[in-house]
Each structure stands twice: as structure tokens, then as C-alpha cells.
Length: 324
Image 1 (cartoon, rainbow, N blue to C red):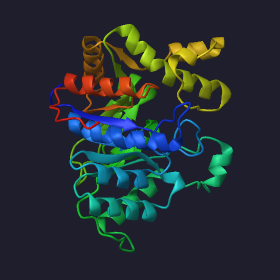
Image 2: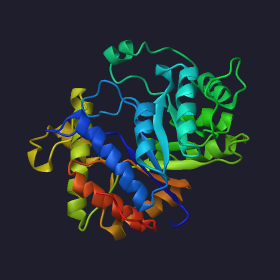
Image 3: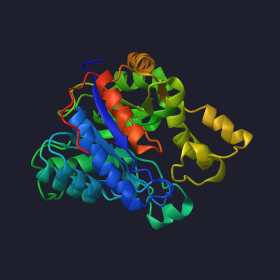
Image 4: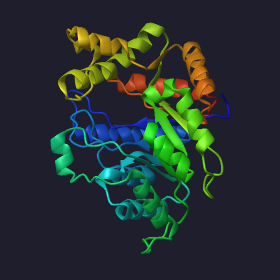
């Protein structure tokens, strides 16, 4: 696994008893640690009106991270194009590329707002995703009807956070993809992406990154406990419609039968270093992925930092002194 890219997707998860500002501060510290541990890339996400997530403005947060780091690549996973005008997104990421040349990646997706009120507040538009992506790329390349400024100091790679339709769009436009969730169980979907891929100047061959929760601990039981706060939050979201802040494991109370089923169906990769190495190796072999995107989160920030370090060691990253 030495030649596989390794990155973190941090959604700026909130925690019971802590403020949104604390969550943002933790994301900045985690990015600095990821850089010191040798991670290749640090992704941040876009969510709106979600109690459990403070990450709502990827371009703004990436600007902060650019000032806090010096080497690691920084990306959005992702900017949801139905919420934005392609020109505005191009201007934001061209600005980022001007201040952090060669380090900025633009991941885009098409997920709608979490609830109807959020969609209304975003003035969400019914646009064609492929058309929006093509327009965005034209603005970044300087080939659109108008010239977006600033002109990027370095090319801004565009990635698609892909589901079934997103994979088709990425293949047609010659773009790399990051996939997760049910797509990981559908090798035919990735085969179709690779077979339909139309090479582009920026991406001459198909490229796949896979996103998964990965938590490493000294024992399998400890790792499963680390995965429980996120699994419990997902179960609540699916049964109550509210995605909450992370709770300590010991404060998680009784679950309904439906919630317990969702928790038990968690797709997280957990275990000791040896167990996680086996599971990650199987995932990478099954998908043919070029990069592992660890979307891990848990209530215990110290344990999360230890898990990030253990995963970096598994994938043979050379760590430099880790900031506190």
C-alpha cells in the first residue's frame, strides 16, 4: 500500500458540550497534524443547517487551512454545485490557488440541501450537473465567455464526488472521482466509469479515490467504541431527521430497534493496526483505488489523533514532528 495516496476528510463535526468555533479550531489542528504525519491531502465538506456539522463554507475554511499549513494539498469534498453559480466557485478556488499555488483541489457534488427549509434558504436551482461542471472548468481554464479573476496561479484539479449519475458525468468529462457508501459495493459501477472514461488534458486516465470511516486502536473493541458516536449520529439522522453533534460513548442511551439496526450496519473500517491493514487492503484491491480518503470522526479527539497517526504508519507515511 506504499504507493496509495492517503488523505483525510474532516467535516468539522461538532461535539456535545463544545461550540462550533471549537469544531473549526479542531479542524485546523487536525490539518496541521495530518501534514506532519505525511498525509497527502486534507478535504473539507459543505453542509448547511446541520447541528452536527460546523463546516458550511469550504472555500473560507480552506483559506484558513492554507495559512496554517505549507505542504499538504487542500480540497473540498465537496462544493455542491446546485447551491452555487459556477463562476463564483471558480473565483473562490482561483483565489485559493493564488495564495496556495499547487495545493488546491476542487471536489464538486450534486447533493441537495438536507431539508426543504435548507433548500429554500439556499435558493437551490434545478440545473444540469454536467453543464455546471463544464462551465466551472471553462471558467478555471479561461475559456468561458467571460474571464474569471484572479487567474489561477496553478491549475485547479476538479474531482467529482460521485454516485451513479456522478460517475457517468465524470467519465464523460474526463474527471477523477471520489466514491463512498453503497458505490463501494458495486464494482460494476466503477468498471462502467473506467470503460466510459474520455481522456481529458488534465486527466488522461481514470482515477478513483475511495472514502471510508477508518478508526484504528490497540484493540478491536476499542476501535468499535470509537466508531459508535458517528454510527449513532447517522442512526438518529435516519430515524429522526436530525443529524446531531457527536456524543461520548458512555452517554449514548437506549436505541430503538431501527436505530440499533442502523448502528450495526455501520460501514466503518475498525480494528487493530493489523486488522485495519487487511480491511483497507481488501477495499483498495476490490475498487482499484488510487487514494484512501479517511472520513473518520469520533467524540474523543485524542483517540482520533492517535487513529490518524496509526493509519499514516500503516500506509508508510514518514512523519515529521507533530504539532500540539
